[in-house]
Amino acid sequence: MNLIFFDGVCGLCNRFVNLLIDADKNHVLKFTPLQGKAAAELLPKEFIDELKTIVYFQNHEIFTESDAVLEILKSIGGIWAIFYIFKWIPKFIRDYIYQWTSLNRVHWFGRFDHCRMPTEKERARFLD
Image (cartoon, rainbow, N blue to C red):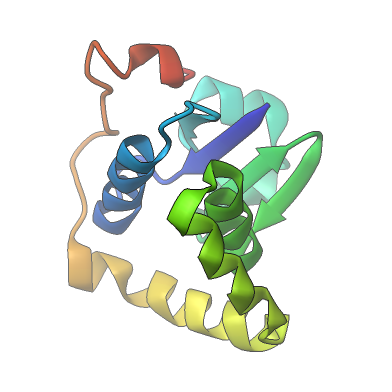
C-alpha cells in the first residue's frame, strides 16, 4: 500500500495532496490525515504528536521529510518521477530545506479549522 499521512489542517499539505490526486492517474496513492484513526493505528506516536513531516508508508517502509516527497513523486511516475534526481543531493541538505519550509508553512500557506474532507469522487482514495 502507498499511503500518505499528511497534516489535515495545513494549507501547504492540502495543496500537495490536491496536486497528487490530480497527478496520480493510476490511483496508486491513498491518503489519510495524521490526525486520523489510521495514523494512530499505523504510525509511531512522535509523528502524530509533532505534525512536522509528511509520512509515506510504502511496502511496510516509512519515509519522512524529503525522502517521503521524492518517493511519492517516484511512485506516481510520469513526468513527476524526474524529481527523483534530487535524491543525489545529500539528505541533510534536502531535509534542512524541508524542515525550513515546514517551520514556515503555516505563515506562508495558512491553516484550516478542520481536516480536509475528500469529495465524493475522492472518497475511495482516503482512509479515516
